[in-house]
Length: 509
Image (cartoon, rainbow, N blue to C red; front, side, top):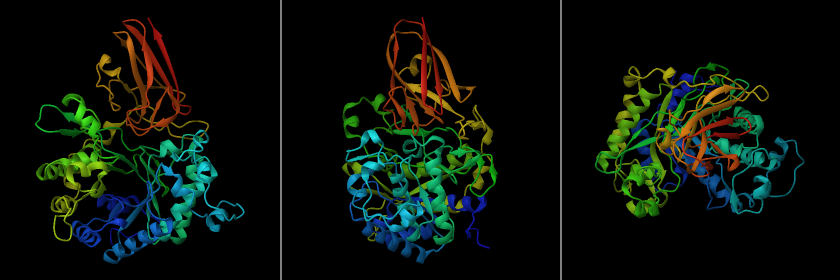
């Protein structure tokens, strides 16, 4: 039987077959070089196309979006019926996208509600305090948002998509205590998929290291962008990758206990190059501003061809030896945001430059070599998975059953004063210790008085952070709270409670 065969269920070995042949194909349904994209897919042996469809801010009617998504899926599956296409349901919505969509009767029926002749109510999808805004974070604890997520999911399943990326899941679940609402929606989509999906199975990931409730994982595998450390002693804007928290364990959706679920790394995008930072910051500060003043894919695309090939190989091998449960999502197609300022192309494309794809970055050959060579050659040299273990292992909240994170880090401008790198959310030096009862703590001494900032990074990443500034989780390096030190040599103790996001700061002169 073919390694990629599945129908109704997907054992871990089959899931890993797809993840081991995975690539980002962001919005490939809009590609103007789709025929050449398919040629590259077949040449490289890619079997999983991440982010193949989805909207951040839609620029066409919803009906047209889904029709174009369906036609692209149909064409790709005609070339290779084994391929899994992933759709996205993101953590941000716009009024003009949501408020113009009529709610189908079958969505009301799925939620046991009487059918109404109306469109989605955008304001009822937002966190209540944001009502009236043009755009914002959806609140999954609200039924209207659940209906919106479900609606998009079933439409993609009908178009032939069998996987979902659920974005920064820890942000829109801020009021979803115990992750009950998102668990409900995902299970509803799984049930719809059992009947209507191409192979009676749909799988889910999100930007998360772990989403486990009552011992069971809500997701099939976890996914995160990579983390970097800039190199200041090499010519050019060079960097290396940094190992961070592992993928958490739990009972998989297949009903099997996994010490660590599979994990997927990617080069992420969030707007391209920060031109202001690049023009105004000195070299040493620019090095620490995101990825040398830009997002991950724009940094990668800005390197010369030889450097890009080298970094692809480095990322592939780095993944194999630093996280034995992880795989790398090759960039087949990824938006460059304002990257066209420096390379004139709106998208990065793996394709070799040709008449069929004049805007290709010419990296399909190195990708084909790595994908066909596989991970196993390097896995035998991998560090053991236990090297990534941290405190609060397999510990759940007694009330909700939510799994506590194994790694929690304090980060901010205070870090250099305790021997760590500023704003390093992955630091071992400022890692908090689990003290029981869902709480983490860290004590340190600040040698100099002054005003500093800090926040709490769960799992040691910037994807789900908490500060004293807001009760809700946020992502990125902004949003930190204040740490006011009145005297030199002040002892500081910070305590963080995971389920409530409460942060307590004590100072002793």
